[in-house]
Length: 171
Image (cartoon, rainbow, N blue to C red; front, top):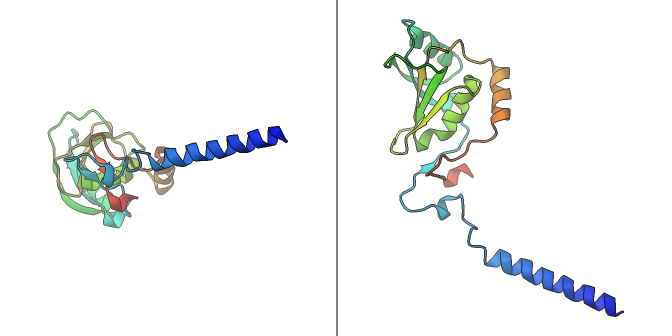
């Protein structure tokens, strides 16, 4: 009987400890807009459909006209191609994705079209929701639908870049 009382008392104390810890949790808003430090941008982590993603396609390869061909490929996949042009040569990567807080989820989707081999260039001061896709010398072709889906699964959900917080709509 005495052991039962001790076990009951320990259970009540454990429950009280857990409730106190939850109530006093000062990190309840960590990682959300409510817990975001002043001045930090809010990152849109929404994984948009291609039809809702705006891109600029820029050629940094030695092959003339490459941006136009790839822009057509993106249009055929329902992306909103805003601009097509050239960028300074010398990008050794497959591609570079340049974007700001409003395009984090869109950049995450586009990364899958490069099989997660594009270089990220996040600019917290950028205010538009467009992603610049800069084609590098190692670019071969865009991934197939199956490869894109697999890459998205491998990459996991979009995350807020360092120095930003998820926007409330991203929850």
